[in-house]
Structure formats: structure tokens, C-alpha cells
Length: 280
Ligand SMILES: *[C@@H]1O[C@H](CO)[C@@H](O)[C@H](O)[C@H]1NC(C)=O
View (cartoon, rainbow, N blue to C red):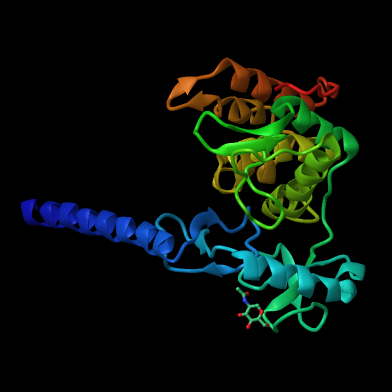
């Protein structure tokens, strides 16, 4: 008994050390460990170099040559774009299907066409923008991460937002739409399942707002999702929204307000949205 628990402790320690080593392994090649379902990585992902869930992969740095290759290659992406797809290195997550022969660049740069699923409306985008506020200049968020626009931490090509970055309102809008359309909305749609259960448009939008805030991995493993899948009109879904209000174990008023509004929107108690002003 004693022996086996000591062994368990020892294994945990080894695992922790191995994971530590893994995080360094990614940094050593100049990469960043990211949730590959949430972020596009221009230079491509490498598996096995990051700690945590299998969704966390090492995004290789996209240097000047890589950026210049990307801009050259993307000029031959027409066949993919007109098929409603997006070309990227095929180590990227595609919430749909990859196909070859529609993109510029090497054979590994392929066309991802999203599953046709639930999409956002203008009112849904505005709901999220209301919560996020708009910053035209990069700032550090509470976790110290450089952030711009409506809470975005990465540009479309996967580059991290950096000190001194700026965007016009139109540029911030398109960055925001990119991540919602390419990442958060398809992830939520795929998690809910299609075509059933019968989640209505505002319910879908409230869930995308929630996921934009807590992340795709958290939504994926949440009880909230399980309840939505079982019965989207279950009134206890409100309680599940309200469980996600803590930062470091302490409830935060701004998050309580957001979750209340998201739940109200979800249950169509209040489907109003604000007008987003520049907040910083
Ligand atoms: C850029 O493209 C050239 C020619 O296709 C290729 O040899 C090189 O590996 C690419 N570099 C990067 C960083 O993608």
C-alpha cells in the first residue's frame, strides 16, 4: 500500500518533470505552446513538445522568410477561397475537411473548408463586443498577455499581439470576426453537434460568447455543454453559466454580470445588445 502510493507520487513527480521538459522543448525551437483548436499557426504545429492536453501543441515561429513565403503562396489560394475555404499548413486544426490542390505553396499547405454549421449574426458579434470593449492600442490583460481590439491576443497569422501594436476600429472588427468565424463559432458548433440538438440562434450565440471568454477547451469539457446536448431548454443551464465567474478562485463582478447577461440572452429573457464604445 505504502509502496504503491510512494510509487504513484514518484511517477507524478516524473510526469511533472517530463512536462516541464516538454514546455522547454517548444521554447527551445523558438515556438509557443498553444491550443491548436483555437489558434491558427502559419508556420505549422509540432506535436509532443508541450505539456498539458493533446490540444496544446507547439506553434513554430513564423520568421521573416515564413511570412514572405506565406504572402507569396497565398496569392495562389483562389481555388480554395472560392470554395469557401482557407489555406493553411495541414498541421492546423480544421473544423471541417482538408483538400489538396487548391492552395499555393507546398503540398502540406491545404484547403480547409469548414463544415456548414451554425454561424453568428451581427447581433451575436455585438453581444460579445459589448462584453469585451474595444482597445485600439495593445495593452497587457490581467494575466500580463498583450491584447488588442476586442480582447484578441493573436493576429490572423498566429503572431502574438505585441507592445506598440495598434488597429483602427475597422481592422479590430475584422480581426475579431476572423477569430469568431474561424475558431470559436465552428468549435462551439462542432461541440454541440449537428443538426441536433435543436439549439436556437440566440442560444448558440450566447454559447459562443461564453466560449470566447473561457476558451474552447473549457467549453468542450464543461457540464454546460453536456446539459445543452441533453436538452437545450433545461432551466438549470443558467446555473452552469453562473459557475464560471471566478478568477483565481475569487468571484469577479464583471464576470457575474457577463454570465447573467449571457444566460438572459440564452433564454431570450433579454436579447438586447449594447453599442460598443472605445473603452481604452
Ligand atoms: C520558404 O520557401 C522556400 C521555397 O519554397 C522553402 O525552401 C523554405 O523552406 C521556406 N521557408 C520557410 C521558413 O517557410
